[in-house]
Length: 184
Image (cartoon, rainbow, N blue to C red; front, side, top):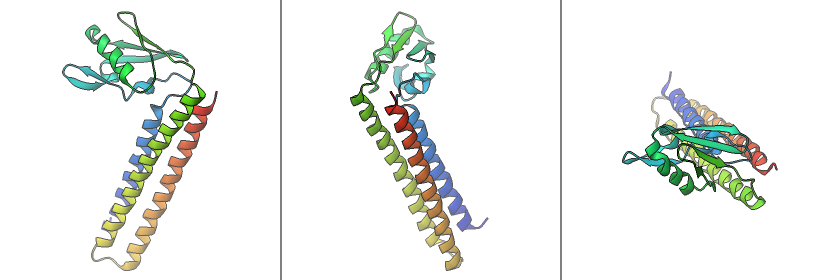
C-alpha cells in the first residue's frame, strides 16, 4: 500500500468514527419511546470516581414509557438517582429502595424543538470532525514525497468524495432522528 493510499484509508477511518460518534450521541437523545441507551451518557459518582451508569447498574425498558434502573450495589441507589436528576434529560426518577423507576413524560412541543437543537449540535460536531479528517489527510497527501502530482490530485479527490459521502450520511441520520423526535 502506497503512503497516499494509507492517508486516504486513515481519513476514511476517521470519518467513519465521526459518523459512529454522531449515531451514538443521537441514541442518547430522547424520543417518545423508552430506550436503555437514553441513559448511556449519565455518569454516577461511585467508588471515588465518575462511572458510566451502565457499569454500576442494569438498565431496562419494561414498558414503552418506563425505564428501570437496578444498581448492583444497593449503597449506590441515591448516587444513581442523583446522577439521573443531574443529567439534562428532564427525567424524574422514583426510588423504592432497590429499584429506580423512571417514567418518561410525553414530550411537549417546546421540548421536542430543544431536542432537535441538541441533535443539530451533535451533528455539527460530527461534521467538524469529518472536515478535520479531510483537511489532515489532504495536508499529509501534499507533504508526501516521491509521488507524482497526478497521484496526489487523485488522492485528494478520493478524500473529498469520502468527505462528501460521510457528510451526506450525517445529514440523513439527522433527518431521521428529527422525524423521530417530532413524531407525536
